[in-house]
Length: 99
Image 1 (cartoon, rainbow, N blue to C red):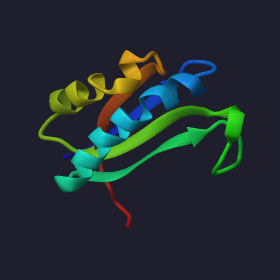
Image 2 (cartoon, rainbow, N blue to C red):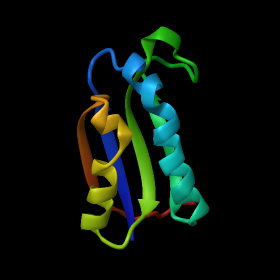
Image 3 (tube, rainbow, N blue to C red):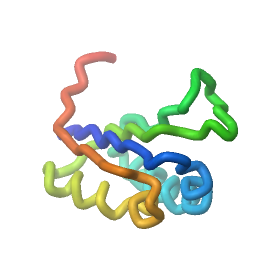
Image 4 (cartoon, one colour):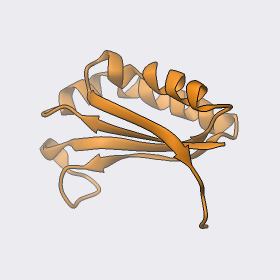
């Protein structure tokens, strides 16, 4: 089943994000290589694909996992959590209708 992982950043998270971004992206690349990643990306703090110093307010990942517990375990192991980037993370089932 698909699961949405919806994370909210702490204030002024940009420096923390940048410090562990390679490890965060490596986990996403693994999901992609395994054929489980539907989409992933951050929420810019301003209306811009490159928000610069404004940074980001959170992230969204939609991916396939065996169960809600597996999705939560994967999300809990994200380097952004260990680095203090995320204030909270919500994981819930997702039903893709389109496309």
